[in-house]
Length: 226
Image (cartoon, rainbow, N blue to C red; front, side):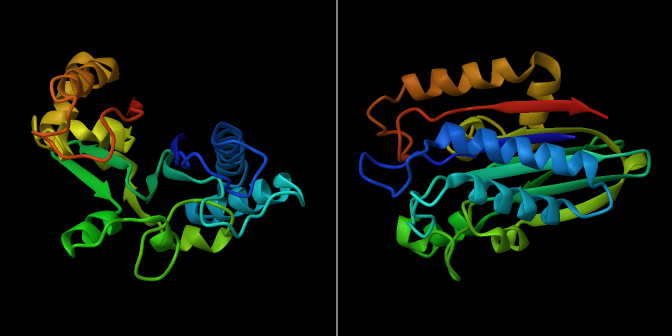
């Protein structure tokens, strides 16, 4: 089992909660891992739903969980046993699945990309509403919006989960495609990919050559051979 959560950093304004994003991601990630391991009889989406509910209950009455910027995170989760590999992706982190024939399949929640393609910026008012995009926040029902699937274990060789900051190597800087990204991870490891992203960011500090919301973005990668 693996899970990668990327906390959504709020702007410097009140967001209705006394807890920070690190608190939220630690609580949610811990609950998701525990539930995914102990409740293998229920789908990953249900595990995420229950983890969100459990985390929301831990906030306390002083937190306004209806606030659009209440602490939240993107989620990638993969769970496997001897028979199957189950995956879940919510928001703009990425999952790469390498099959035994060498092909690499990206699993993406492309709602933000759809908004951008339509000329709409993925602003806070579009978060967790119909026609917008979705993150794990305080509403357990959002788990139903995740991209999910199951594959036979025998056909999967390895998986990699990337936050959008690491996925910039493909999606922003166009240094290679997803298959080349996976090959780099297999050959040189996650830190090499992150170092390459940092070098590309530093080479364009003014964000002129490659337009992006932030000069640098948090980057995390988990690579697992099955």
